[in-house]
Length: 86
Image 1 (cartoon, one colour):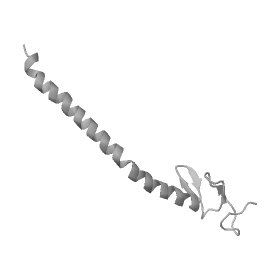
Image 2 (cartoon, helix red, strand yellow; image 1 turned 90 degrees about the horizontal axis):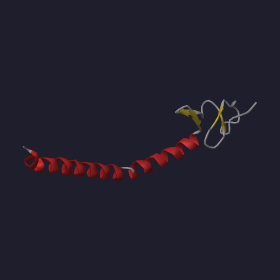
Image 3 (spheres, one colour; image 1 turned 135 degrees about the vertical axis):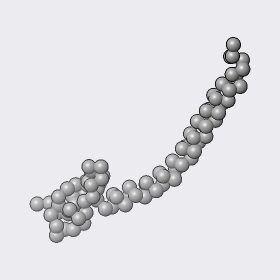
Image 4 (cartoon, one colour; image 1 turned 90 degrees about the vertical axis):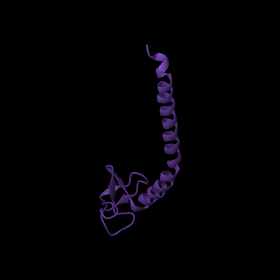
């Protein structure tokens, strides 16, 4: 019978899909249908904080480009409105 990597006195119920550690029910956290141990969850949490900060600028830049394109498109249509009228 397999035992938990972090609790040698407990029976293992699963495997962490990131580090392949055999873990018990207390150490096992299921996220999106995948088992993770507490050490891998801590690593994922740190990465998530960094990534959230990095993704702010592309969203702002994308919104700004979309806003300018919208203004140019409809501004040009409004300006040319008199030329297109019969």
